[in-house]
Image (cartoon, helix red, strand yellow):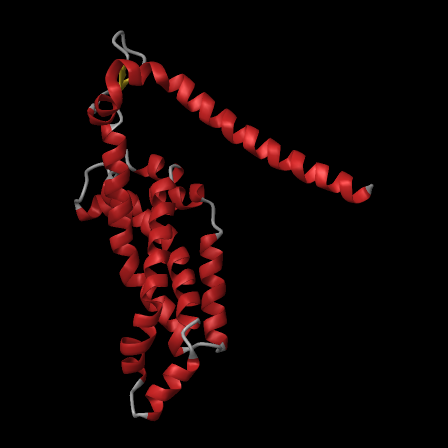
Length: 222
């Protein structure tokens, strides 16, 4: 009897999740169907005007899409030169050492900071620096947003890359060392090639985080 009741509860939980998903899809499609019927998908994506309160009610997502792509890819470009060395530091050079554990803890702490905190940090700390550099008179824009996004996704990329580097078999490394290879040669010819697919996947996940981020970008892009 208890086993049957437990199965019923599990089934009900699964059904609730499916109903919630269906409700979200229905609400999004139902509310946006009129716009797509009037403008079409291409018209919605290619129109840069967004003014739902005007008499003509313009709905265009072009500026939002382009802004998201620009900031996310620039953030990824800034992320790679910083996250990969951290991954090599934790996963290769100081693997198993106390300093590696400390750095990993700091990285995990950065990953847990809310995006609103990053947005405030960018607004009050980085924005005045951007104004002083003369990049933008107001400080807002893609440049500032990309920097903050890069800082936000570095912990994710470095943590995942460290895990994949740690999964490289030790016998391959030991065999290379026995043949006289240096540590940098082992990293270059064994660790990175073996973990390359996982490292690429970690950056794809980091890019997904950047594409889905809204709060910090909204505060800083202007």
